[in-house]
Image (cartoon, helix red, strand yellow):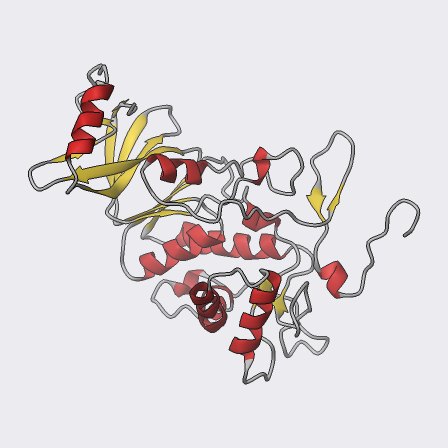
Length: 318
């Protein structure tokens, strides 16, 4: 059965980004630098409340003076993923990732708006001349940028300054995306499956909807925005031909996790309801080491500890 919403206000934007972590902010900055109007939504009062902010160990950059770095990094990623990682995605990350890091985190943005963003103050070598790269987890060479043990904090504080100062970005906090707006089209008609624009009560005719769906073999669906719950409690519509779900994972549905409490899989649920295909949902990232304190949320102990030679011992020091 399709839920109908009574809409109080309609907004329009070129790009709608749902989520305010590193993925959402970088996507928004790229589009805004290209002179697109962007709206970012976060259900949090503080947009820093995200998985990205909590990241400790660092972010992949590239090994120094290594001409074969793309192949070496690809091999490391495949080995860490038990050879199950998507080859095209791995190649894209290994070949394009360093340039993206330089663009958004090392002062490489070249648009007229880039003056609003300073480089992230990553740690440097003792002489201050070069970036300090550390070794982490399955990497065969030092290639990890870091800022003390709070890399995510440094990155997100930097990105959000750029986002807040960008004239083409509208950042809305305390605003919850409820559902994606799906436009269903056939050769003869176009309709929205979850919108009641006239504020009229609606009794959904489930059988009629199913009959119409099954008889429209030539129909297709496209996402054209989202239905949101605004800060003042009103249900609004955001119309946009481009929508990015950057809502993070769903680790908090488990009893033990290093994820924050807002990592509930909301974006995945919205995507499924809208008819999007999801894949590899059985692969959940669980950080191998957290600090347990009775009555408190556990938090992760950075993988950089093991990269520097730390040992994990049980209560009897094995």
